[in-house]
Image (cartoon, rainbow, N blue to C red; front, top):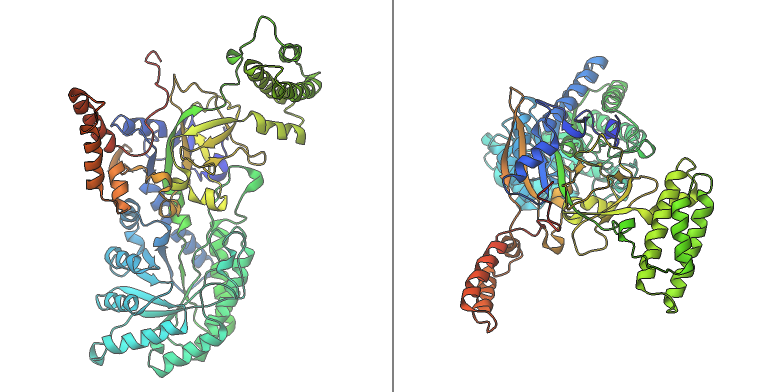
Length: 621
């Protein structure tokens, strides 16, 4: 059963088993089972589940695919990879990443001082560290310290000013030439080639980073004059994240490859690596019509290896080591956000909500008759009649001729007629029906913050796979719009006619219904904002043992209310004192009630901002 596009985005990591979505690993537990186990421990808000085995899978696949490409073409250079820390710096991810990647000498890439400290302290001995982005003297000095402590570190030059600082720091650190140790040097080149899509501006002449051809030649001369040419090790380029099209990469590879060989022929004998940056795309789409990537990892690896070999042989230079910094590919699939539905806001449009009178306005009576006599044969005609009646009835309400009950009945009856007509005419697929479908969508209020957990959807309209955890043996029929619990109209994943999401009809007073958001492991956590002071969800790591069973560990609870305020530099001790004082000094509260209210207050302050529930679950269910 190919529901919710699993055959497109899931990469066999998850599958549907009867009515649940399950992890395709070990004992193959359902996500619902894992979620319920965590909730039984008292964690009721949104949950972020991390799966280290999926990090391991991505790293293994990346290295294995490049190994196969090297073997197929007889490539003599080595393959290396580093993880760019900007993609996800959270400890539970980084610790799992380091743990599962030791056999591959997988390294880290840093773009700030804090990231550099992480890279130096976490990277295993011998594994590469690359340092990108703008750097001052202090940051470059940290790179020299790393080199002197034995790290395999490469500093990428983004501008000539940085190279001048490297030369200065080298003199300070290596005054004793017998003990001269310095980091390797890379040069990021500003290519003419550009990528495609949202991040295409990472390449091209107007890109933020990199050296022009003129600056490359000047940098080469500066290295030569200061006896540092033997440290020049790497050429680096990056044409953008989430490259959906392989063609721009091929063009960039040819351009960067020729720059590499030209510098080698000029006398840069120590130059031995080309870093192709990140950009290896992840397939986020749930629909065949909107797939984001037109190539496979095998094609990607084959193109890189073949082109580097072809250019090197044509220029008579040694084939370079190949580096990648693909972070999204490594991290995206490892985490799943799970959040409960709190309420359906459009459930009032049910026949049970009608307030029909003994005698109703004629047009409302006609709507009632239309609803109960509509058929495939007359559906379009009755649909048009219903829409026309609604306009007339709303006008009558504005003029004061019908009351609020009549208006409510009008809205319910027309909604039900539209819903039934769309069901009867669903095979026609006309634009009119698609437009009307927007009117009958169900609004699912979900216990999460879109700004905190899916900021790329809000900021960049990046789609993420969404599906319920269970009831997958039933065909969902409700066109769904997802609302988060923030006090912001932008906190919505609106129903799209082009990329429709259908969910089940539920009674949240009687049953729990969870939604899972997949491929959230790259960028979403580090870009998440505390809009409305919603904080990072409770997270835990799901580790599988050799016997296939799993454990739930490394649990980090979402911050409570006072911790969030403390992070914003509020004086929480003063806030605590003020709240207590307001209760104790109130003239409207008895002494006994004051003690009770203080107890409740401190209980609530120990909770996080996410909601517990809106409707109580029926005890009889």
